[in-house]
Image (cartoon, rainbow, N blue to C red; front, top):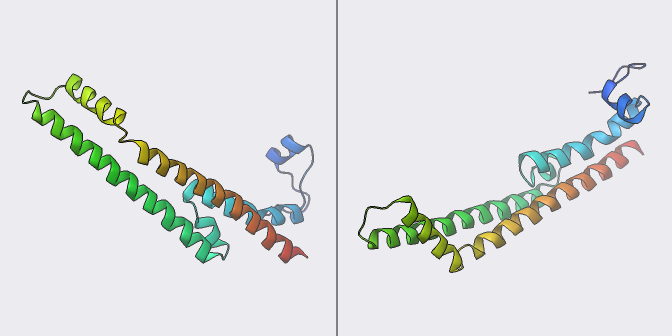
Length: 144
């Protein structure tokens, strides 16, 4: 939202000590919108909104595939824990489940999940920085 001429934004005035002009507010618009969408909604969405649909779609597919991999791996671990608890023959209690979970995680069951989480974080960070850079380029092209 652009401020009317002569209007003061209390937040920006408090931070910078000066009132931004309409050109500065407009120049920040695309870059911040793209970065915010990729940061706060879903990685790749900022690229799609800024007209880089293929790049955004690739990021979305990678993140969704990694999330699906996490669900599959977590399900495998949970089913393994369930088999161990049921094989004991006793009524499952918290101590039995905790011990089986600890054993499954020590056996390396969480390794793939950790790598998939790193992949998601890397995609998310790339999406934020890339959307900001694309937005800045679009803003620069529009102003000059």
